[in-house]
Length: 453
Image (cartoon, rainbow, N blue to C red; front, top):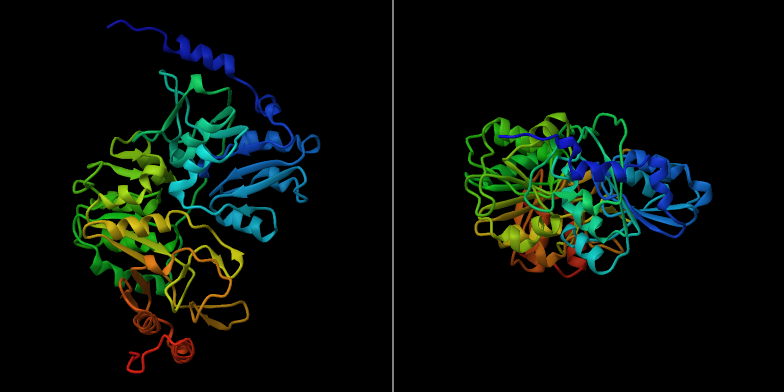
């Protein structure tokens, strides 16, 4: 079979024609523009640095991103926010710190709706995104940021891609690439090692919570695991258990899934859709995760408007969704994104998977929470509240199913207000149960024959 010089084909000639330095490329940004940095590892560090250099000549440039691990130079260089005004769809720990400093504003959403919002309601003047190197067919892989990347690039007036030689190439799925013909400018540069989201050390409470969930997972279940210590402890327990033939359908893939794969537990053979493939939208973890997803036919990256659609999730039998929250009130309202009025993270896909897993045949949706916390002064507070008063609600009480603390697991589906109250007080921290009963009596949601364990 004859060969030809692939590096001299039409696509590479177009690549060279569109190639710019980062400083040259960001000249397209004008005062008042909306600029998008997409999500997580899609963040373009070289373009961000170049745009920050233009601070004094630009005003009111508004930016969107989410789950960016930082630093974001356009934010760091402009504490007045006169030149650059940053907004996030879902806050990483770094972006949470920006919120604390009034350097970031949250955009309320459920992840399945992000791209439809762009498509229908939002403007993007310039989109900048890190991508894997172009292949010989002219395609850049959107890698760890496929979940929302394609939809944002499609809406942009001008598309600039920053080639990151370290990004893994994650196969589709669909919506996992963009062609050179759809790109306006290409930027290259030397990049540091990919950001590492190390596994948090689980607390004693995390371990007890996981132990309550483990009996609810069976052979052939498909898993969605949220962010934090809980995915790692669940993954470890499942890896050491007799449970097998597990599947993966998640908005965000973490190291926990690789650990399950390495233990021989993650096969995806029992899934109703995309059988044999681990499905994800966004990928954040450590090098072992990035190496696993790289060019792996057993992994499929797909847009979150499909991955997180409750009707997609509902098609998967025995779908298990495990997420965390910050607090819950006696009516069953869940706050997973804010502590009082302090912004922490975001709705993300929690409500998407809570609804979808609950619709699945044999499916279960778990929301996990430590029963209490100790503040900086050493004072313990209950995470089960009598009622919310201005707190931000992530999951409405009408959607609750399984709630888990270190003191037990309850299922509130179909339960009245007094039944919910009794259940929640029984898994609250013992130090607060009596005062919660008094509050419930005052709120007329306590049955006189109710009992505490």
